[in-house]
Image: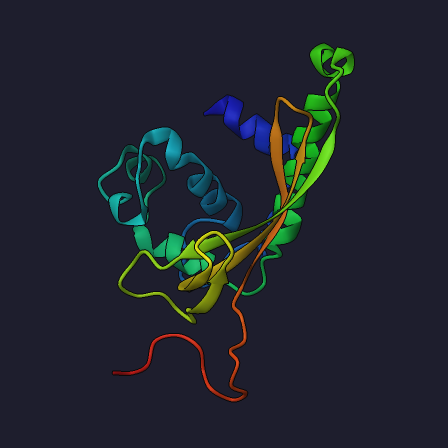
Length: 177
């Protein structure tokens, strides 16, 4: 835990960049909630609903609501957070000797991927044209920008998109029926 905390300090992520010092009715600061979110996979916690009975909950306290309410904030610049983490990781990778001696090219990868409908409830889902299946499917398009040196790969940025339909003014996706 101490090593992980020191790593987060090296990232220079503070409460200001994570949405302010503290939210109303929350006993934890935004930095502490962000740390909990990053620690979830290391404690084999599969989702927010499993947080209540976990060792992390016993250490930090709170319920799963603090995680949901933190992620629903509008004042966190997630692109900046991802950029800072990726930039820090890139500086650690590019100083390695195997990276300096490698003959593999360093490249930027732009990828457009289909994200088909997998659950019962998905917001603002629409029909997209899948180039893989050569037909329209329900889902989203994901546009991703990655950096790779042939050994490691980091996501720099991403965005989710829907497609406009052929008929102007007609909403995409599932109808109320």
